[in-house]
Amino acid sequence: MSTRTSVDIREIEAFLYREARLLDELQLAEWLSLFTPDGIYWIPIDETQDIATHAALVYDDAARREERVYHLQHLSFPAQSPASRTMHVVSNVERLAPEAGSSDILVRSVQTIWELRAGDFTQIGLGKIRPLVGTVRHELEQTDDGLRIRRKTVLLIDRDMPQANLTFII
Amino acid sequence: MPATADLEFLSVPREPSTGDTGRAASLISETEHRFRVHTAAYTKAEVLELEQQHIFRRAWCYVGHESELTKAGDFKTGHIGDQPILVTRSEDGGIHVMLNRCPHRGAVLCREPGGNRRALICPYHAWTFAIDGRLVSVTGRDDASGYSEFFEAPEGLYRVPRIETYRGFVFATLDAKAPALLDSLGRAKILIDRKLNQSPNGTLTIRSKPYVGIYEGNWKFHAENIIDGYHFMYTHQSFVKLQNKFGDTTGDFGVHKGGSASEMKKIRTRGSVWGCEGGHILNQKPAIDTQEMLSGPFAEYYQSIEKLYGAEEFQWIFGSNAGCIFPNFGMIHNQIRTWRPIAPDKTEVRIYLYDLDGAPPAFNEGMLRSQERFYGPSGHGMPDDIEIFAANQQGLSASQLEWLILERGMAAEKPLGDGDIEGLPSSETGHRAFWRAWRRSLSSGSGQ
Image 1 (cartoon, each protein chain N blue to C red):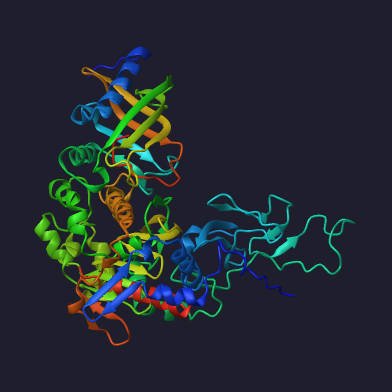
Image 2 (cartoon, rainbow over the protein chains, first blue to last red):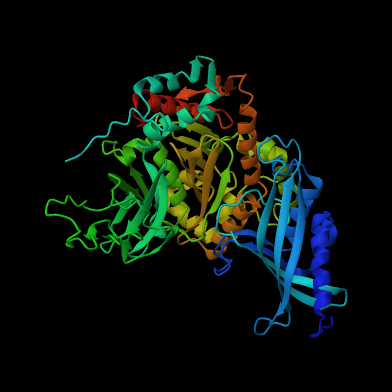
């Protein structure tokens, strides 16, 4: 596994756009392949607290990501009947200095994720577009197969406020 | 001199009259083999007004846990029904429950959900209150434009008249004449006891910020559902399938026991439901895998609990115990739940995950992750319940059909001798007890 320190910002942006497209088009098996085997998908309530003793909105290792994708793709359940449609808008992409001792490429972006559950739009909860807003930190590793996610952290601006249905992938 | 305002001319909102409570009682239709609840009980603003008046202003309501207020000056905000409150800890260790409102001109004192303050200072005119609620200074009191010698200064913030703490759980009631907390809890006290007895120290600590959801459905759907043994295999059918495929690998940690659907169903039909006269409900199932617990990776911990309480009680302590304390407090797995009505079709639910003090850190972490997996807004279970509450409320807009059916398991009940009733695990025995207490509260004007 080789590491490269000089990754063009365009390559990073292209990677984020691709991830966004895979999520919006529900190409979720391919989305799974974007992570390193030890990768973590994390949506904290309070990112300053120790994950071992504090609950998160999402804290998915590989097995839990696989379960989440299986749930969405192969099972029918009330919270996704009808299913969510999403549109991830990625902007303000910036490469930041990595954490001390880390060789990962640290990228911050601002994302607005528009979500809609279609269906009988006369009913509660259906037919309304709602926005989720936050910064997303990607800790990326350059591998022989290209960039891979070691950690994706979504910091919703309302992460410690009431949350509605978040059973789709952010 | 206390003043009494005549509010009769205010049509909206109004203070409900005695006649209204009698009419509200007719929203339940009960005969020997039939138990029906009227759609209006879930949909009408007038009903919620009566509930606020006759249930939430009279019942013991959970307002917080002592582990949330460990130091002098700690506070948290909350609600008793529709009344915004502050819960504080003072220097002498005392816990105080007061309305979050300056008695001067009404501004709220705290707009944060919690924190630590040396004093409570009103942002409007800086009237200052000690953390225990006493008024300590009125700015410019002696100014020429200030207050005269006849000024009847309030003693402090409006104090919720009764506070009682049971094993770290703080309850308060706006009814000065309410019976003692433990009398009100009755047999349902065992819910709190068994949950706490899972800790070698007999205590718990809340560390995480709660999961908070606001759903578009009536509050009573949640009270019913937390102990509803009937819906799990259907509403959570996809979770049962996930559990079958992924349960061990993603760390369910024994929270939802049984790998296959038939095994889960078998476990879920053990035990019983208690529908208590006070409206409290317990759904309890003894653990079946106690030998695995006592010899598995946490053997030492489990053995310490078995030693304290004996083998028989051990299987109940670590069984599956879910309960609802009337009207809006619940416990299930390792979590405390509260729910409060915001409107007839809008309810806030809070889920506080907790650690068992003295249990191995890896045990607490396992419980935390497994509950996150099911109960969070991205979980594989609770969002389905929330969806159903909204679907129920949506369905009730078809109000030409008037009654809901809640008579499941009515023929398989036995009285426990003191007004409490025991039924089968997937019955609606508990729901009926809740509704009878609801009817009694609204009929007599006394919830207890």
